[in-house]
Length: 432
View 1 (cartoon, rainbow, N blue to C red):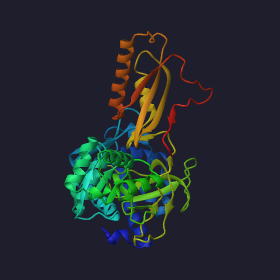
View 2 (view 1 turned 120 degrees about the horizontal axis):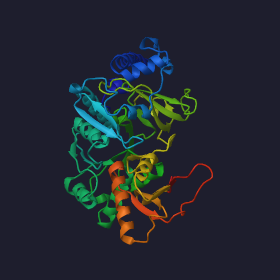
View 3 (view 1 turned 90 degrees about the vertical axis):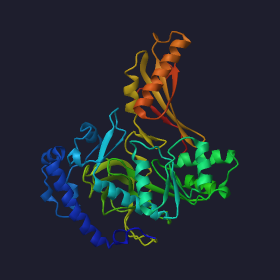
View 4 (view 1 turned 45 degrees about the horizontal axis):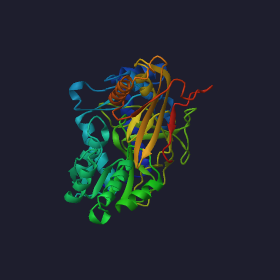
């Protein structure tokens, strides 16, 4: 089944014409409604009228996460606040989040794009979908919620946590679709095994997983553990949330909703375009966003594009699973975490030396974040009560900034290894 055959199976030349028309509208929108873009374009000597073909997008400057942060909270909105009906946010490189807005039409578009993504994976109006993403400012839960609702599936908004209860809900409610991060899905499978519940006791058949990178080996483990078809989907808050692309049952790349997003792959060092099949950094321009349009947004995600028609019948370009990033952002249990966020917290707390290490690992299938903090000689008093209070203060501040829990380990003075070159702040021990 195909949700929107008119656009998902469109002739490529017709798609390019539609993209060009919408791209011209977007460039005019941001130039006349968003002061940042007007100044950016003028500073690079380009105007919307300079775009005559899709290839001309290369004349226009990139948008970076720094620009989104510097215009916190509403500086990049292209509509007045009276037209904004929803706000979401994602982590920025400092304590300030990236705030994104949606008009009523944006929300309608979003739901429709998710409807495409879940239909790609085989979801229908006969399914019961359990969403284990955390509801809140994060776009994942609400994005999948309204798209699944659009196709007619029954929604179980169980959110994250309460693992045993999640499994009982799956069993009692007859859940057929599991939505969440792949690592949490594997954690749930482990817990289900301890409870004596296996795939044969449940009705699960489809997994819609995203918000973190995962391997083909992990797909095989998910499908074995749950007896499901596990599919990947991709999105980011800065351009919409989930709904940018998703896998069909062929699982040979994620179909990109090209009528709503113009995608490029560039050399991350030079900014020059890469050809089909060539690996590089994904760049996205929104084509239909009203409240928060972005032009040539550098995602920092590494992928490659395939423009060949898929065996499923869709003609939309496909993007390969993201294999890495060009910046230092960590994705921990689906949450974006920047080392600079952690550093900013530590530097505000007295008694801490400017030496720390971030260690990421796995406990079972769940990501675990540990921050090792070196004390100053003055703070190393030997008083257990003082150390315990300092540890709790650090943990609480990190929780407030990162929105996830971190284990804090206080280290003796001079115990963290020094480097003559660039300090190795992050140790990622998770299996690749």
